[in-house]
Structures are given as C-alpha cells and as structure tokens.
Amino acid sequence: QVRLVESGGGLVQAGGSLRLSCEMSGRIFSAYAMGWWRQAPGKQREWVAAITTGGSTNYADSVKGRFTAARDNAKNTVYLQMDSLKPEDTGVYYCTMGSDYWGQGTQVTVSS
Image: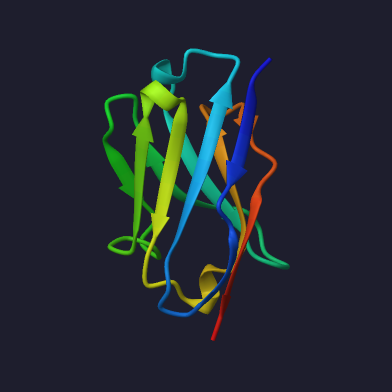
C-alpha cells in the first residue's frame, strides 16, 4: 500500500523560508516522478513543482526562482524548499507520486 506523508508546514512571515518533506512507502521510490501541489482557501488545487526520476525539475511560474524541489532516493523522500515566501503561497501543500497517489497535505501559512 502506497503511503505519502508530508511534514514541515507551519506559520512563517513573508520573506521567510520553509522546507517541506514527503516520505513515501509501499513502492520503489526511485522509479516514480514526484510532484507538489497546493490548494489555497477557496481555490482549486494548483500544480507547484515536479521532479523526475532523474532529478530534473519543473516549476509553476508563480514559484520559479523561489522554490526548489529535490529528492533523496536513499530516504524515499522528496523535498520542497520554499524561500522568499509570500502571503499568496498560503495553502495546503500536497505531494504526489505519479498521477494516482496523494499525501494528506501540510498547511503552510505566510503572514504579511
């Protein structure tokens, strides 16, 4: 059974940083592309970042240059380093494995 567990969310002031982690179990982690999505209050979920099995990354324009995705296959974990945070980055952040599996989410709140 696949399990994705996010951690690292919290409350931070604008301009600050957070690092989210997502640990996967139940599959061979290195064989899967991983992604990050977020959902702001009252809005639809939006894609944030993706990282391939080889470590290549892509980002939404809204976070490009501020967020960095990385993976550690030895730890079955994907990370999202978020710098220069803005209030509009507030939301629940989810990690995904392929297109079928989602974590439970972790709340990120950026105060102005």
